Amino acid sequence: MKKRLLAMSMALLMAAGLTVGCGGGTADTPATQAPKTQKDGGETTQAQASGGGESGEQVTIRFAGWLEVEEATSQLFKDLIAGFEAENPDIKVETVAIPFNNFKDQVMIAANSGDAADVIMGNDQMMSAFNGAQILQPLEGVLDQAVIDDLIPVYKEATMYDGKLCSVAWMPHPVAMFYNKDLFAKAGLDPEAPPKTWDEMIDAIAKISALGEDENGNRIYGLAIPNGKGSHAAQRFQGIVYSYGGNFLDDTGMPNVETPEYKEAFQFLKDMADQGYMPECVDAKDARSLFATGVAGITFESEMGRNIYRTTSGLGEEFDKSMGVALFPVNKTGESTTINTRHELGIYAQSEHKEAAAKLVEYLLSEEAAVMYYDAQDAMSPRVSISQLPEMNKDEYSRIFNEQSATAKPVKITNALFDNAMSELSKSMERVLVNHEDIDTVLADLQKTVTDLYK
Image (cartoon, rainbow, N blue to C red):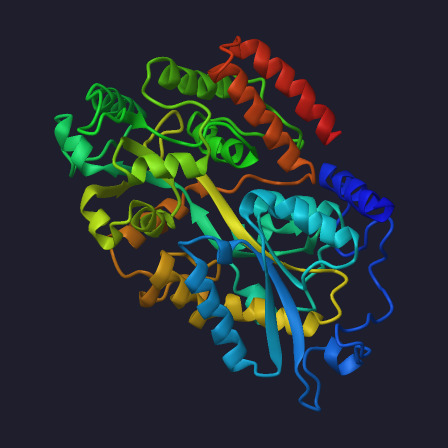
């Protein structure tokens, strides 16, 4: 029990964020360890550690992620792993499936005990924390350099820490606007002419909200977006901040939230909630459910939205008839400015099978895997050569997201405590939306808190 409490305590310390670059171990766990014992009791050989060996023995590596536990991606993930194993019969992949909301903490705990998976999935927030805890292996010299050189520059830059490539973007997720054509028509709006400006969007939101209830007595909202309950919602909120011309960081890399732009973005949320146009403090799952069930007129979502809504609605491709997609409305910046998040892949710094792990990462970044993911989830590729293939640009939906990608900006995550800062921002959103506190006061408190975190 004492060992378990110690491991959990250390994991929480790492989750708070050590601000050092990738490639080392934790304070108690050096980056280089003596070979461990396999589950069958045999010692790991150098050939196994390098990924298969010349003698043809099979090596087992583990992949930690959440795709397998989500209905929309479970089968796809199994197909991807099967495809990799078919091409690499000397490597077997065991999956460590962890629900998204628990993922970061569970990886931290496993890493502290020296038992994290060889390949670790994460979003950009998680990877910043993993990097700070020194559990990520620098990838140059490990991955095929041709793959690294083919990464779209903005995505490669986003995963560099102190000049080291500590993870790679797997799936970039530019956020665009989704809208319900049926609700547009009922509200007297043209379902084939979505809002192009912020003011037009607010007008549409008001008219849809005025519909009141649907035939089943469910409240109809003009807007449903994540606006509380965790760091993910706060990071998504940065897209709205961008549209007002703001930025989480100033030119020195420090938090910069006590600004007119942040105040305007917070005021937008407050107005939407106060007028009953938007439910307050919902997470991404709640917002998706409202849109998928036809009681929300507008939401903001990544390119994975189409298949998420097909699955969540239970209607499959039939849902497409009610769904429209358009560029993020133009606001104060004069262009369609929004956020671009990423799913990323990293290799555990203490992995004994880095060569095999690298092969799995390279496969997941390959054309074969990218086309599989695109066909199943409309996922985009971070590689220049693959993103331009006709197979990755089959319809208008893809065209919208490729165009949106050009103006969607990643949030620059330069500090291991970014995820903690987003959690504090989420709490501030709740203070405004639920407690109805003064925005200036809330932002002043938030500025102090996140500045202290970054220091």
